[in-house]
Image (cartoon, rainbow, N blue to C red; front, side, top):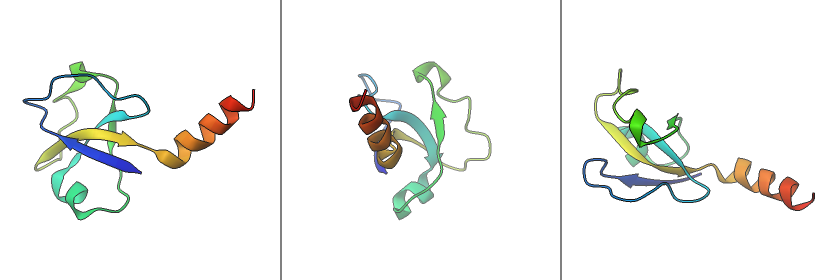
Length: 77
């Protein structure tokens, strides 16, 4: 898993290829390791899934194991 935190208030750009836009609890994301996150389907969903989060942290997450398996299956076709 690869997580890149962003400042949602100042970020300009788009979701990088192979990544998902997510929101997590900041303290959990800073601790490192694997963690759960809520996937957003676009920047229009920012703010809609912060209930229960003390300090929301937005970022881009690449689920490498899943993505790599999908890419291998796709390449084999």
